[in-house]
Image (cartoon, rainbow, N blue to C red; front, side, top):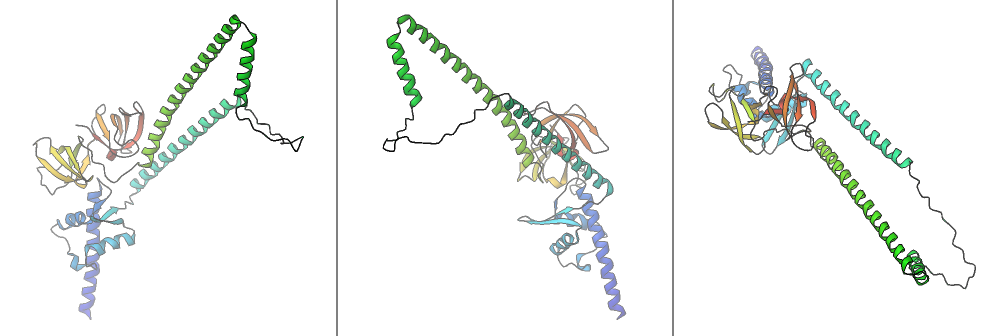
Length: 340
């Protein structure tokens, strides 16, 4: 009896220690990313010499442990064709404060958009107020004689104008006909000028609409769980490759399947194939060129204007695309990286 109690207590103590070590491994990895394969976490954990084997815990397989983390609310887990992925839930007060600030900023952006939409509606309403809108007058269809046939002339205006023109041409002389011809030419010229102006307005409006559509599309596809892009400078954060590559910088030469990159080391020229979980972005000095890797401005090049160490964010100026010249504040460190 005492032996079974001892074994049970050791097993519970093993569960707690194992869980604590696993979560600490998650924290080490998630300092630079938000989502990682469960095998990477386990390999990071067993790299410690004094680790506790899974046989000493209540979980028989790594999949069972992953599902348990999801049920207990310690991590967000999801199954993909490549296996199980874990997303660490950081309940640190500083992290929660940063998330609240980001949500507040997003709400302010949405409020600004609503104000802009209301302003545009007000401008349209004011523009329509100065114009007199023709109100159609409806009359009752009545027949004075029941035996009379009802006929419809769909081209009445054209027939009337043609008849009037022929009558006038027969009663007027050559000089009067010249005057009428010149007046008609002036009217045609004015109508062509108006149509050209209308086309120009439509072109301007369509360009504005195009920019707004681009903005809406970027907001719809704002964030993704992958961020690698060619020709950006990254830093290796994994220790599995040894001290030779740890904390060293390289240039992404090729992106494979969105999550893997071929990186050429800057100092040695070696080429390595690495997962994005083993890399982090590089923030340059103010005034240097960067590439936006995630969020609404993804894919745009820009200039780093300043950084805010308290909020782990930066202020940039967009240099490419239809939003060139726009100043953007509050871009997170992990959403930008230095260009090679």
